[in-house]
Image (cartoon, rainbow, N blue to C red; front, side, top):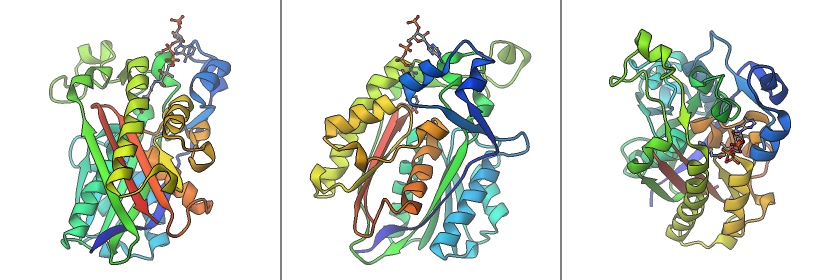
Length: 326
Ligand code: UT7
């Protein structure tokens, strides 16, 4: 049966490294609190001239190179992001132009931190149905642009970056074995960006009220996250006809080391099998999983025929997981 398979990965991290000590100078926080409560010690912010589309294009070019696929052979570009360069056109269309993927259709996908896995599930539908052969799935964010640097509850958590994969048709055993997607709109109030959409367009008032910044109820998201990571992973693993002991490696969303450890413990998965990079990059929302995946691949932590679980959760609320035979 025709499957979709990742044949190349790439990532791009922007210019400016911001440490916890740097943040101590602008908001009432400290390195000890951030490290012990989140596991984060630094994050990267894009320079003013660098946008989500630029980071996406850089990550995409690396993924294409790793895959040995030309940009002109890409059929579809999906960019998962909550920080598109602008409302219109889509960031995916900008990426199409930047990398010269002249034949590709292109659209953005909004599922917050779950967006990249949602994107892979969409790509899988186009590929397994025979409609497309090569899809570029990108998770990319410039969250620094929507961070309220006076709100210590959020500004210490997030960073910018992009990760990309080329998904292509496969007739072998390798490829996407299963996925599980979910959403609970009743939880939208826990993580949201009130301003900048059509409901609250930019105005003097909306800027004065700081409505163009991300708002979060951290502890509610925390509780939801641990539950969602565990239950979504279990569902995808079962759908793939596997059990936890068959899982060789997990690439989770990188929001908080305590969330990752709690989920791994519930799943009885040793931390040696879990990719963690949030210490360096913080939470990059849709970019977290593809950047962590690219690093795991390049560090040879994922080998041929390994069963790899990717799992994310985030605003919406949303959650998503998949199992990929590498
Ligand atoms: O990608 C999905 C999006 N987000 C997430 O996954 C985030 C999920 N949530 C979390 O990771 C955690 O809830 C946080 C890291 C956001 C917060 O950790 P927590 O252990 O839940 O702390 P808390 O919110 O209960 O706050 C504990 C204390 C509070 O002080 P009081 O009221 O006890 O005096 C906060 O005001 O820590 C204080 N606090 C800080 N102190 C120093 C909150 N932020 C900071 C800070 N620096 N940056």
